[in-house]
Length: 100
Image (cartoon, rainbow, N blue to C red; front, side):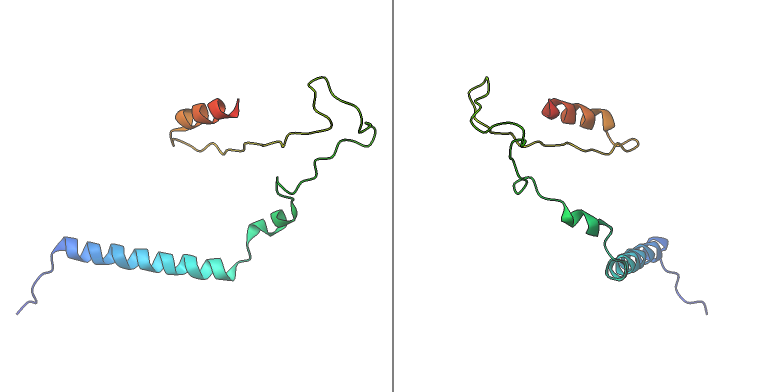
């Protein structure tokens, strides 16, 4: 006598769940085993802690044309990565609008 046949979607669902669990387990083990790649970036100074002093050649008593005396504005660099077929034109338009 033959054993009862399983439904094909049950076997596929079990395979997908087991595959997802195995993949997440391997990613977890890999994240603990490999040192982080961004370890060298921790030495950069954050924007708030960066010194904002005028150059040494410029006297401190000089008042600029706009009335500010030796103040500087923090600079923000916008960095983005263009990927293939991920709403890139919409994303670029949003970034360019806020970057201006």
